[in-house]
Length: 276
Image (cartoon, rainbow, N blue to C red; front, side, top):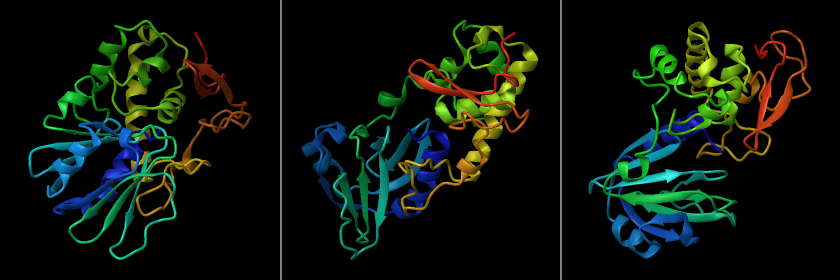
């Protein structure tokens, strides 16, 4: 699933194509892609409206419209956008679930092989985003905030960091990477982290995310994450432990291991990230 760096990169690619452009027509090939309203109402409400902003909140894209409505998009496991220049023939892509034609003739296709991606056209974005936690790249996310809030949770630190109501935007890749950088075992109790450890973790989360955003996100071998122009992200060449089980830890040389937490793969170094 695309995480904060990937969604941020997609937003930056969509912004120049969408901002200031009106929706000329919409085609919906998979009605369940539209969570709210229904697909028919979605078409009638968005055609003629104009995009005024493209932002991100957690793993959601927020497309602001002149009407005051907001189109939120959650890519889920396999959703992606493709920008098709005016006059270009439609892609031979059987997994296109929705398409927008803009008033300059450009087409924006939403492609989603696994059909989990969702659109929400709402008057108030908080109707969808109300339960999201703090943004990890915002000024409000401080080492003190993290230290104080970790103390309230006795569950495993890795599971907590994946909880979108705690911190919005983190996923399996960047949690594994952040815990490795901070030298913290993923099964540690969140409340057991000392103040120096929570400071290290805060630094690691911010640095890992900023680095991944600068690299345009992570494109794994499945190539499910690509830019709207079909280029790949570049952060996969900088991953330390994620998807590297059996390889040498870049820090100590011991073998990186894989375990499962909450039905999700976790990658870590048992030497660098010991359990106290």
